[in-house]
Length: 546
Image 1 (cartoon, rainbow, N blue to C red):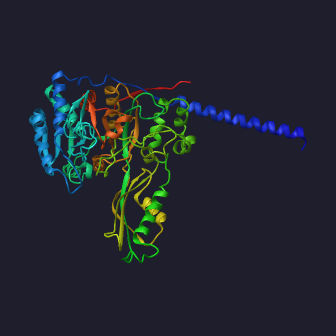
Image 2 (image 1 turned 180 degrees about the horizontal axis):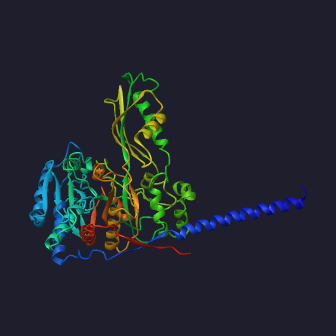
Image 3 (image 1 turned 90 degrees about the horizontal axis):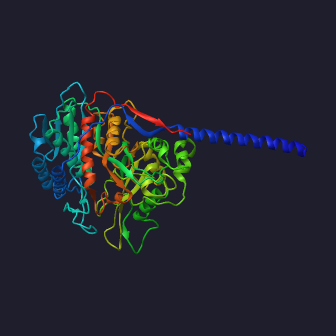
């Protein structure tokens, strides 16, 4: 072929490539700037009210501080401070007399320490809903705290103490909201329940599960459930300038395994080539060096980024709006940025539950590089307990490790177990399942779902029209026990979290601002009023324009 012909052919190919690139660029920009906006207006006016008088604000502050002073600590399923839990029951009776004396509120103590409130609406044809919170807290050794962790001390506009965020603020807030509504003569149209579990931090098997059994025995079906979970995030998600609200529409599953190796014991002066400890250590090392597969985009996490795409700065907005093309880059890109690796720091001696509030987010550059965001893209592996040996000169017969996995929403227990078996690949290591459950079903978040749209409407009203998107809880909540009562379970804690607040949950100097506590109470107040509609709230969304 002549040089001229080569040049002609090359020019044609270049033109085709440029045309293809241009077409792709136009398609990416069109999708980015024509996605529905998070600028939302609601048909009709939102529920008004919920403002607190100075006296009510003072009582609310005192109510939370007093609740924090009752050390309702859960150490394990077998060890809880039941004296404090019993005291808490008497405390809420004293602080919220209107709730306990109302003719439309029925109160029941469940499993000795949990509480179930049934609020009778005027229209019994409407399906009821439920709001959940929990009384128990994780341990809080005083070392490292600026104030005693169970003091409820107020300082510089904040109330400090274990439970200020997780989850006594929600307990006090929802009861205070009901107290205010009753005091102001409001009679709800739709019936609802309030469930306060006493062992959420250690499984919810004795509290929330017993509440579920009671409701099932009465044939109750719920329209939706709202529990603690994600929150309004301010300055937490890189590339987004204003606060955004995430509603947890699912939770990761869980597997806890024991890995056990049994080998002949002996004297340390005549060791075999491999001991039980060595074999076990090698197995554990293989699990840590070979993490579960990256599954970003296969679960509901993609919807979160896509719905928030318009909030990101350029060029992140283009990437988030076109995950079909950019998800491998987003999930694996290694550019250094501010990590969220300290988003969850459990208190000393307690690492049984990662708070759902901590967002697994750091969208560009670090999804696989920081613990909190890595939890979004895969099933995580955590070696939590090792047991072996009794004496320095004795080779032990048995060595055992406990490993906890938190399952990505697109992965089942059996699929994860198969990967574990293949990764260890050693018949000498016995694998036994202590407990497990699959990821929770994904609750609907479309425009026809009453629960999600009512939550979104309430969030917009209380949090100054903050954009709302579905998210994934990387920890577990009591709401997971309610899957047989409704398909609409949402996990949202109605307070704002900044980046520096994330480590306080289950960590040191847990606190909530006075303004945040008041807004939290207003959220429940308006949620109750908004839920009295008999129609799905209608949102009108703008579109981004080129």
